[in-house]
Image (cartoon, rainbow, N blue to C red; front, side, top):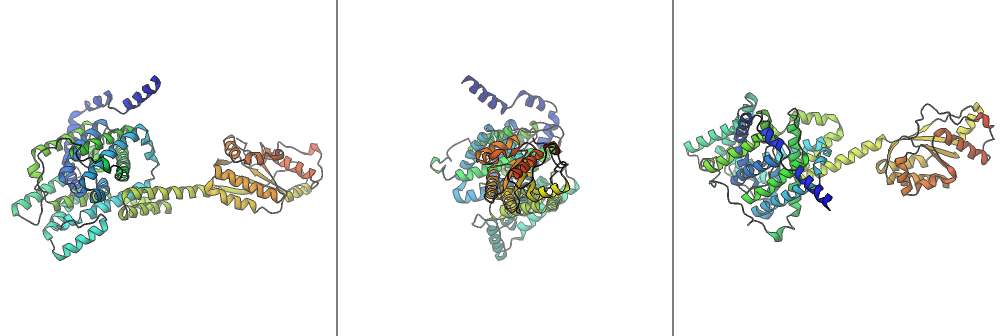
Amino acid sequence: MSTTLGRAWARIASLLPGRSDLAEMRRDPRRDLLAGLTVAIVALPLALGFGVSSGLGAEAGLATAVVAGALAAVFGGSNLQVSGPTGAMTVVLVPIVGQYGPTGVLTVGLMAGLMLVALAALRAGKYMQYVPAPVVEGFTLGIACVIGLQQIPNALGVPKPEGDRVLVVTWRAIEEFAKAPNWTAVAFAVAVAAVMLVGARWRPTIPFSILAVIAATIVAQAAGLDAAKPIGALPSGLPAPSLSFLDLGALGTLLAPAVAVAALAALESLLSASVADGMTVGQKHDPDRELFGQGLANIAAPLFGGVPATGAIARTAVNVRTGASSRLAALTHAAVLAVIVFAAAPLVSKIPLAALAGVLLATAIRMVEVGSLKAMAKATRSDALILALTAVATLALDLVYAVIIGLIVAGALALRAVAKQARFDQVPLDHGDHSAKEHALLAEHIVAYRIDGPLFFAAAHRFLLELTEVADVRVVILRMSRVSTMDATGALVLKDAVEKLNRRGIVVMTSGIRPGQRQVLDSVGALDLLRLDGREYATTPEAIQGARDHLEMAGVLPAVPAQKMNPKTTDVSEEPAR
């Protein structure tokens, strides 16, 4: 009992911050403080925009950036990760808001946080590495398209139409705009997006997003443009933590959305942390601790009215590029945003919605890595198919279904590729010192096949078809030393093929069965069948000698003097049995 408790405590302790984290924060605080300030300036319009897009308002985005950003920075598994509201999460939250309302979103966030903590305890972080790159690229492209389309109503200056399908909502928004065009809103959105895109190419280190938003706000206020609808009043501070939103009776119906949010939070956070590792030298995140930190962040954020959060790739990249070296930078980012919430809420409330729409439109465009997409599309047809299918599914369905579809298709195509590697080839026999006449006689009655590669469910039935079409011979030798893996389906198919050949009067002998294959063959009863009358041999030459002995006993071949046989002879294509 004490041993179990000790292991449990050791597991919990491994997920908590340690002295090394504090030591790293003391290494270069000035540099981290500057990086955190820069990230906060970039994050402010994004937090406001994603809060508005989620349906819970700009204040929810700010609360998420502050609370989740701080907790994920302290408890997360990456020194450089910046967390907060993201476009990918917004894509998932919009239909949840439409179906369950704001309280449903807060409850889902809390449930998702608990699930992430459980995943961390189960050491699930390592499985991120099994998500194929085309799936990641595909859903990133799909997310970018959805984020862009979600901004169309605000960019056109029309009320958001009813509906939870982004394509339908976008089309209805365009119809409303056609009835009563609002060119002022369009001008603000296009101008802000253009400034961000052009500025990023000209001076990547300058936060053009906040500069463009400030300029748009000043112009809108100075000109008194009613068409440039502002965000609206924001609370001057974070609300007191509360569980009043929690509806225990609705937990069952919210379980599926919570699973979707948790899956997305895990996937995007671990992906973002991996990106941060790749941009630096010597940094490596702890995936399980990252899940733990994101779990705590998502448990806490709803208590303050925030939406579910994840690691944010764009903000994390800015953090790395501006020289961050420890968690202090992400903490500074959260602290600066908290100051803005308490001190500048009246100013922030005057920002035009169209300007925020322009920020998110530019963000969506910058999410699309054209070079990476071209490389992935040119790699193989399978990669291109997976990428396109995941992107379309993200746009037409939702992100979680898209990832599931992408993983299933990627897995099926991978199995197909592996199955094609399995080969079933007839190989020549080496008959030792036999004469040409004896050689020809043996070749008429014995055939040897070498099985290369995996013998599993995806390739087994092709093997059965080829083996049972063997021409009229008396003995079939199966050389199995090169079978790389075998599952129950492969063993059953092998057993079925042997039984069919036996019914035709053809004896099947084997050579080189590996120790790891014996358990599978034995579990389905195939091993006993192969051992029938001693028909299993360690090497192919021994199997050939066994086949000749059988044919002699059957009177098919004349007896050969013992000195003529050399069972140690092997042909050049033989591999020792392992």
